[in-house]
Length: 116
Image (tube, rainbow, N blue to C red):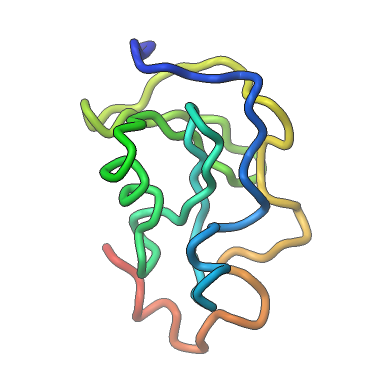
């Protein structure tokens, strides 16, 4: 399935981690990248769910996983996965950046703090 939402293949990701978590000293489980503007936010299992908040704030409905080895897309409007083009590099967080991350910010009881 493809999307009718704007997907920009020329826009690089906003960074290597969740922009809001990094600014607030937070942490994430996995990362998601907006396929329209490149914003990198944390997934819905993460405590702050910034990728979904970005969709609600901007109306940009399509994200792609920003995890190494994953290239799937998700459309928030339909709640379904879809196919999409290759986006501007890099296609994921750095391999040496841990998940959850960022290093040094993840609490020891992080598994109890995930949304399920």
